Image (cartoon, rainbow, N blue to C red):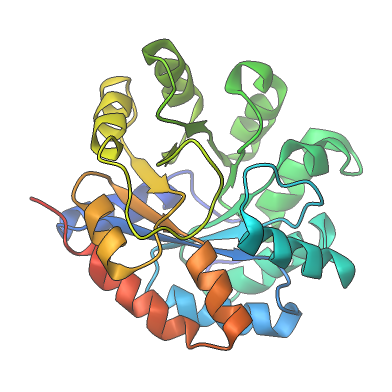
Length: 270
C-alpha cells in the first residue's frame, strides 16, 4: 500500500479517469470523521470504500452552514467526544494504510485558519497523512490564494463549489482554482436526502464543463440508486453523504447502501 505522504498529484483525477473509461460516473462517498466513534468510522469507511471510488472525510465543525440536519448531528456527536482537525488527520492516516483510493477532507475554512501553524501547517499535515485534497465549501477561491498556493506546493488538490446561481464568470474562476474536480451543488440549499433533483442539474454541469472544468461531481440531495443514476447521466461524479450518515445512525448496512449507490453510478449515458 501507498505510505502516508507519498501521494501523486493525479490520484483524484485518475479515479475519475478510471470511472470514465468504464463508462460510468465516479462514486464519491462522504463520512464524518469520528462518527459515530473512531472505530465505527474506520469500519464504515472500509465498507464504503469497497464500492466508492473516493472518500470525503468530513472534518467536524460547530457551524457547518452548508450542511443539513443529518450531517450536523454527526458533526455535533464527533465534536462532543473530542473530535476535530487533529483526529480527522489521524483517521486519514489510518485509512491511507489500508487503501490506495483518494481521500479528500471536506472542511470549512475556520478549522484551517485556527489550526496550529495555520494554512501551511494544515496542508502539510494533510499531505503527510496521505490526504489527496480539500473540499472547501465556504471559501471563495478569489479569497483563498494563500491556501491554494500552499496546497499546490504540497501537491494537495483544492476543490471549490459551484451552484445553480453561479454566473459564467464565477464558474470560470472556480474551474481555474479547482484541481481534481469541481463540486457542483444540485440545489440552492443545504445537504440532505431528496427524492428527486432539479432538472437544471444537467445544465449546471454543462456550463461548468464549458467554463474549463474537466471533472464535475454533483452532490446535495443524492440519496438512492435512482437519484445517483439521474446524476450519473449528466455528471462525471456522484457525491453521497447524508444517506450514508443516516444508515450509520439507524444501524443499517452502510456497505450495502454503498453497493446500491455504486450501481446507480453505472447508469451513465454514453
